[in-house]
Amino acid sequence: MGKLNVRGEELRARLSQASPEALRKALYRQQRAGRVVRLSRGSDHWLIVPLQYAAAGSPPLEAWLDPYLRKTLGTPYYVGLLSAAETYGASPYAVMVTQVMVENKRRPVAVGRHKLVFHTCSRIEAMPTRWHESADGRFKVSTPELTVLDLIQRENVLGGMSRVREVLRALWSHCTPQGLTQALDAVHSVPVAQRLGALLMLDEQTALVAPLSDWLQEKPTRLIALEGSLPRGNERTDNIHADFKVWMPPQQGANT
Image (cartoon, rainbow, N blue to C red):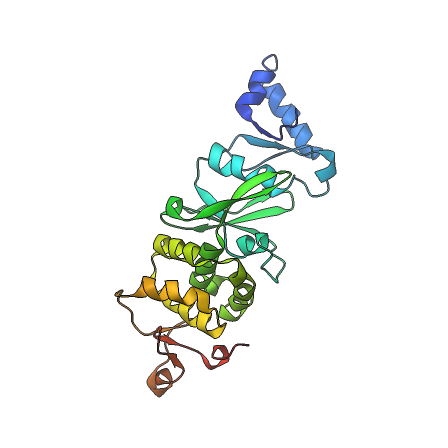
C-alpha cells in the first residue's frame, strides 16, 4: 500500500485473529530483521523500513517526522537551527543530528541512523514555519528569518558566534524584510534583535537593517555583548556598535 507509518491499533485491527502475545513476538522478529522500527517507547508508532533503506535503518525524515510528532504525539514542532539552515543549503557543516524545536522538554530519539535532539520553544505555534517537501514526504521547518533569530539566540549551544556567522552569511540571501518583521514579532526578543542588527551591519545587509530598525524603534534597549557577557572595566567602552548598543569582541569586530 506504500504506507510506512503504522500505529499499533491499526496492526491489531488488521491482524485481529492474532493474540496480543503472537503479535508482540511477530513485531519483535521483524525488528530483529530490521524491517520495522518503533519510533519511541510507549508511542505505539511503528515505521516500516523498505529494503532500499535497510542500511540506514529507517526511511528519510520526510517520510515519518511529521506523522510521528504532530499526529501520533500531538506535539507542535518545527525543524530548526542548523538543521533548518541545512534545508536551505546554508550550513557549511555536516549536521550529525536533526535539531527539532518543541514546546516541552523531550529526550533524544534515535531511529536507525537518524537522531533527533529536541530544544524547547515557548509559543511555538506562533512561530513562522513552512513545509520542507521531497518525494518522500514533508516536515515543518522554520522560515529563513526565524532560523536566523534562533541561531543567534542559541549560539552558545552551537559552537559560538563565529560558527553561527558562517551559517548566517549563507542565509541572508533567503531572508526578506517582510519575513524578518514577522519573525521578530513572533520571537519578540529585544537583545536578539540588537545582536542581529550588529551582525547585519558587519555583513553589509542594508536591505534588512531598515525593517529591524523600525521594529526596535521605541523599544527599551541596553548595552549587551554580541556573545557571552559584557567585559568589566575600560574594555567595555571600546568596540561598541552605537546604533544597536552591542559590544563587539575584537575577533568579531571585523568581517572575518
